Length: 50
Image 1 (cartoon, one colour):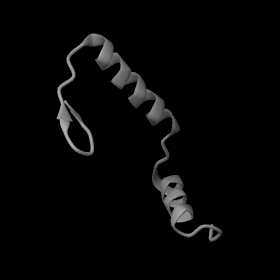
Image 2: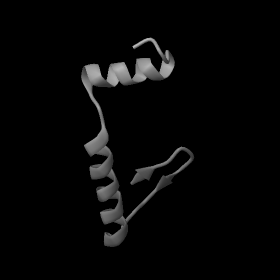
Image 3: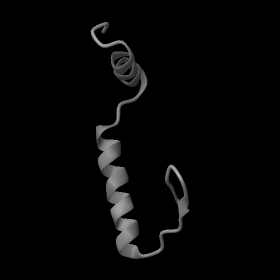
């Protein structure tokens, strides 16, 4: 099951599942956590105050 902003989609085809798995892996590779995530959000909210 994949949730989008407006709907849920049931993904069952192996090729489609592989695309979602790759997207998740790619996004996880550039994600930031903890203090780095907090600094990222603060920089977006208050440009020039980091």
